[in-house]
Image 1 (cartoon, helix red, strand yellow):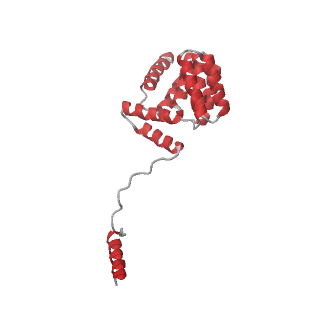
Image 2 (cartoon, helix red, strand yellow):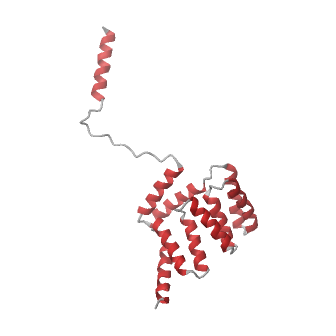
Image 3 (cartoon, one colour):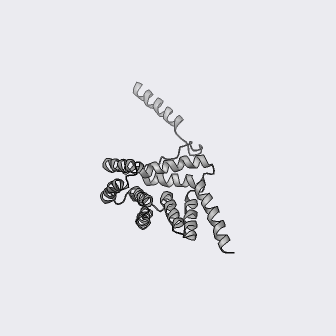
Length: 195
């Protein structure tokens, strides 16, 4: 009898707490993006919607944080060493590390982007452009690489191409102040040249 009573008590408690079909759905939190790609997709969607400049900068910083994660302790260490060499203006040393990074992990877009930056700093624009192209093949939304492309185009006198690159940056990161300024400046310059 006790067992039967316990069974019915448990059954009553279960039926009292069970969700009925006519009950409103419980509030649920959206699923957390578990893969790097999913996190990046969400961050880029947030970046595109954000209209507060400081909040957009924080989102962009989180994107950079995702990009910096290579998934390899050795690659991460070489990236740190390359940054230290760049900070010390030892560009040849930085290139040695970055050559190893892109050889060991050719699908790591940030390795290519960092090497493009070093080439840019050395004014090796052709090599920088080649690495920017590789970066954009791996991550077409890489606004850092697009900024580098725009700067090279401007430095080499290709204002229209520079303007187009800055516009691509703004399509991804609408609140980037420097890109906004460059689009305004180049648009005025190109309009003035057309007169």
